[in-house]
Length: 112
Length: 112
Image (tube, rainbow over all chains, first blue to last red; front, side, top):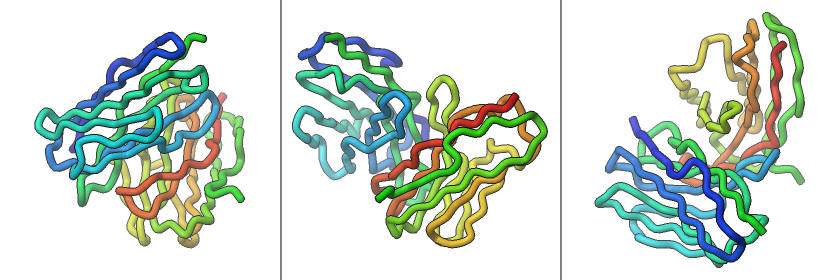
């Protein structure tokens, strides 16, 4: 099966700085990589995803990069704001698999 | 309109009891899921249900059983509740595994 590792487990940044969260996966056949954000007491929500046919995807202050050779992908948040504070989960899926495999989460705190 | 709804939001019960959590989605999705999120915030897939095919995470005790009366509903029934079952349970749905999952608001289960 797939194994997804996520680092760091906690991350504190000053408002306006950038934050980077990294995930590695074990199965080279994985081809779909979503990122979910979970605010305190709320449900996880998709913020961005990337498929294996592209190396980078951007949506305003959020970007995801994928390195298929090294089997890792990263979430980049620029110009962080206090409302970015949340737990972020990466995940990986391969065609034909039954489930998404989630990372263990990163608690991001943006200090005003 | 709420896309994925769960009831109840909170559930407090005694060890040994049997309880159910209901989930409904109005998105017309074919795939539904149940996740368990423990105190460390790890998201663990319990079940996925796609076009009447049930995929069970092998680590889930058989005290847990999903029931799907129709495509829009996937309820979770738990027998003989144990202290370790205390967690937040999320229902989710998606068009397919490789598409955005929409989560319900969660049910916080506390077993005393």
